[in-house]
Length: 547
Image 1: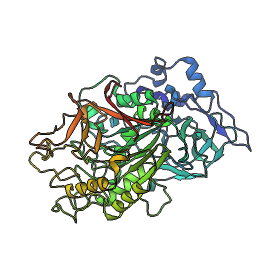
Image 2: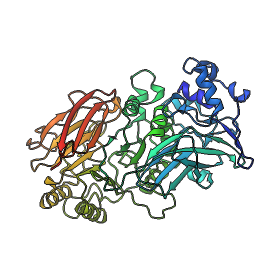
Image 3: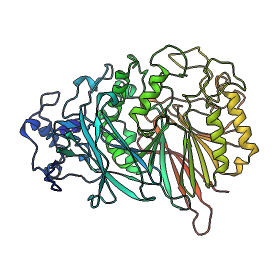
Image 4: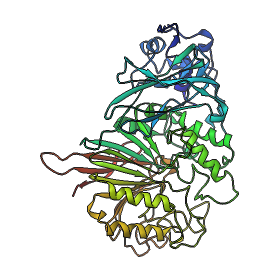
């Protein structure tokens, strides 16, 4: 359990007493809140003095917002109202004119002690209340505007989510949560931020990170770094880098983590809670906007498809994913999770859906078997043809080049792998057809590259026809493994036809950073792909120059 989390329970950021336009901050936290105890019986406030200066603590109790990125971003509980938002805030699916903002109301200072024990199920109940977002173009919230009040209720897991529209392109926005039991007395959350995308005629440097494999259980159960209660070290590394945005390619949580898989709605919701309450997530997402895909482990279970009675069901997996992340407008009746974003003149990204429309994994491979579904596949081809972005990046939850395993690893040893486009018994026919289409339409000369998640090792691979793929590897060190190399008889490339400029020599967590830059002094634009370990050590980098 994070010490800073407990301290955060008892440092309200502000209380607003709404009397017309008057807003009055309180000067100190109520004594009954400050007297709460951490699991070891020590006052969290006293313990927290080792981490927080008196000046910082004074500022936390007097002001309605904090310096972005400061440790006090973890002060997420409103002791005045008895309601908190312990998972912080998150901005997702940011475009040039819209963004989806999300939070969740929870009890102030109330969390089951066994949440820090990964062997046991964890459930932090949400709490009823109301909330809305305050949004402005300056951190002092001059000329701010508010969304309407949203009711936090059990049916939506007490999640507060709103798509905000009519924003200005290429603009830094600041937002914070205004929340309480009722609208007349509320608390104000920490200041968070996002930046809208540029218009498609703007040339601007942009960098972002891509991750996968955020396995809470293996991180907290197995030996690892100090301060594990803060969360994954790679998140701190990413925040220090300061990317424009963060992409989770799937396996954002693991419903089937050993030994107690989550099979019900309540259990699945608690898996997300345990993940996102980790302080390094809260801090990172307060400053860096997000885009999300899902894969098997945050859909149902390992190598899941849409069929079968094994729990959780396909329908429940889809519903909980849409509920727990800012991916689609909550008011959209028929949302799609495959989409493309034009970042600026130099870059367009495609985010595909690999679970909802796939044929059964066990179906014989051939022209009728599809991972994407015919509608998504037609959309992907059409939008690729329409794009005039300098660099075109397809971000796939699963690999398309590999090589990958042909047989599932432990604990599924002996079973053939049928999950992705590289697997001969999986969806290889569709994958080869797509690469043939790319080749026929000249995409080798259109600065097209693939980024994939899913695989627990980092690599850069090149097919014999020249198309390239970068694997992000697992974010978490304890969830990493050594991968398959070209020529490995147990790989999807036993003949060694794939060229691999890089593959992890040691099992290590980490992520991929992508940086797109305009041409300098009349030169061509560039796209750099850099693989890091979880502590920020650069493992590999290659830079592509636009044709």
